[in-house]
Image 1 (cartoon, rainbow, N blue to C red):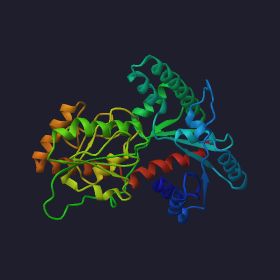
Image 2: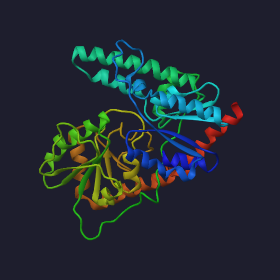
Image 3: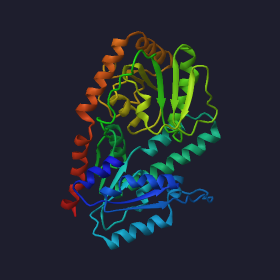
Image 4: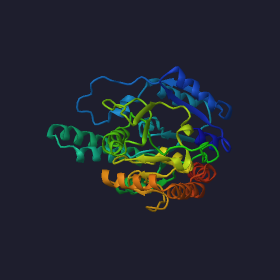
Length: 363
C-alpha cells in the first residue's frame, strides 16, 4: 500500500481514507502523510448482529462502518476527485457512481470459498460452505461489473473473474517489491542452514501451511531449525524441539539470510500473489512451494524455485537443498534475477499509473 500511494503521489494529488483498529495502526499512517494531500484514519466498527439468510457476505458487514460512508461522500463533495480507488473486495461497497472507480482485488474471494466447499467432507458444514460460496460469488461478480476498472494480482485471477464478467475491464498487475530494501544478506561466519515460513495467521491457507510444515516436514529433519514467523500464533500449533514460533517480526529482513535460509511455503489453497515469496525471492533465498504458491510468478521448476505438492516431495526438495550449497545459491540468484526483471516498483508503477490515467479518457 505504501508504494502504491507513493507512486500515485508522484503524478497525482492523493487523499487516503483508511480503516484502523488501534492507536498503533493509526500511527503507522504517518508514513504516508508527507506524500499525500490528506490522510484520515477511521476506526472500524464491524456489524456482528445476526443476519440470517443474508445474500451479502459477512466481510461486507465487517467493514460497513457508517463513518467511512460519510467520509467518502464528504471527500467527493469537498474535493475534485477524479478516481476512487478501493483496495480489497470488502471496500467495494464505498464505490460511488459519479466518479471513475478502480477496484484492486488482491484475492478472488469466491474462488477461495469454492475451494473451501469442495474440500469439506462433513455434510452440514458443506451445506453452510456452499451458501457462503454463493454469497461470495454473487457479491464479487456484481461488484466487478460495476467498477470502471478492476486490477488483480495474477493472470489466473483475471481469467477467473472474466469467466463470470466477460464485459468487465479486468487486468492483472502484480505486486512489486523494493529490491534495494529486500536485498541479499550474507551471514557473517559459518551459519547453519535453517528453514523459514512466514505468514499472517488470520489467513486460513497460512495456518494450514504452518501446521503442515510443523507436523509433516520438521520431524523428518531433527537437526534443522524451523522458524514459523507471524501472528497470531495459530491455535493448536506448538513449538517443538526444532520448531520455533517467533510471533510478529517488525523487520522481516532479519529472517532471511540468502542461501542459508530455505523458505518452505506449503500453500495448498488461496488466490492472489504471495508477498512473502516476493520478499524471499528478492533476498535471493531458495524457495520450495506449491503451484498455488507461485501463481503470478514466471518460474520454471528447478530454476527459480522447487515445486512440491506432497510431504514426500517437500522433504526430497528440502533434503537436496540442504545438501548442496551451490544449488541453494543458484536457485536464489535466479529468483532474484526474476524479481529485478519483472517485479520492481518502477516497472509495476508505470502499469498502475497507466490504469489511473484512463480516467481522463473515459470520463
